[in-house]
Length: 184
Image (tube, rainbow, N blue to C red):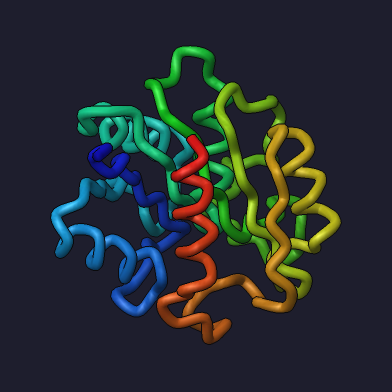
């Protein structure tokens, strides 16, 4: 039997609190003895894209085998940028949830250095898109996915797929991730 592939958790700005699905999945995975690492940038509150890229590299290289990146919100933009660097460390794939639109009105000024995806990914990518995300229209998220060469996973009306959206532990999302992980 294959040992579970590592996951690298890539939260959005301000990190994900304990009730966020990313934190819950990380805790559940760690409790089960399965490999999981969370990025640790020094700039959670005023995100610096280079700091986040370095944190991603540290987290990925801490894994014994190529992991799946599990990103939410600003973490999606960080992963897209990182995957655009041809020298990035090896990963099995990326599961990207609810990208924010850096060109939208509500985008945090503190994260101004983050930009939309510009390069096709060299690894498999799935992008979860909500129809009513207040931080990115479904149309714009689909355009990001097209740029990355990602398969879109529509989830209906789930807001920003976070605590405020009421998704809780987001069992449906976990099933999507596990299906993706199993296909790699």
